[in-house]
Image 1 (spheres, one colour):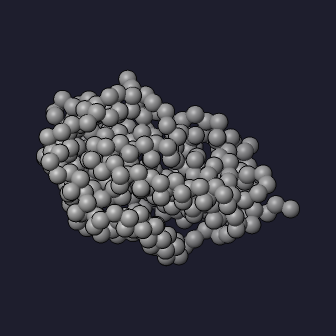
Image 2: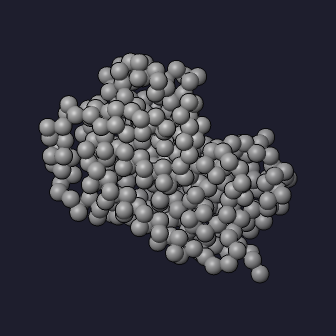
Length: 346
């Protein structure tokens, strides 16, 4: 399959968005109307607290009222649980695709966009936030002076994506990306008092993942390389980041499956030695995927890779590569690709 043009990719993405929205809507319809259900669950519970783990640390939470969420994955988790009324605003850096393409586009429209830059302490304080959802080194950052510990000192609660706990200082914990997603939805359900809704959403996601696994292609798993970015050195996914598990669920094998890390740089020599049969290219809104594919085709180092010669590129949307419900969309999309692509095997 040749690389998609941006209009064609937009059309395919829009189709997947409609399908994902339909699946999640079916889950929501198992309950009363979304807003009323959440408000009923929350009635009389405003002063109660619940203790849940934040990475490896037990933290007592009171029910938030003004959440600030960073990037699509954080926002999507809240929206998928019907918690839009608790989201004061979102921060969405330029790499993220337009929120109008999200399965939760209507929810984004109800919430204020606070910034198109990185998360920072001043923004959170100015927003009078009482709850911040982000990942470690993906939103929260010691260098930028916004960490859960700092926010604790300001009386602002915080929630870390479980998948990013791998290298969280002082309280590291390891969760596979998909189990981390299910865990986060369950923990947020407890914090906001919507445990039943969280269980239904997680069950629906697990069912979709199981369906992809059941349809995985037979035979040796295709060798897959995740190309995030980089020309001097490629930036790729180790076995602690979502694309690794997406590949595994879809029936492939990450050529860097032994690399115990999240996102990291490797050498082009290692990529050449692995000789991937498929290259998954992460699509940033501010870094066109066509440019990345053109580089791989024109570079003398990569032009003779099996995947490049066979033109077997698969595009993974940015929000399918970070912790959030849309990683399941990514698994479904790659699963379909691996079942249908001509990998040039004799």
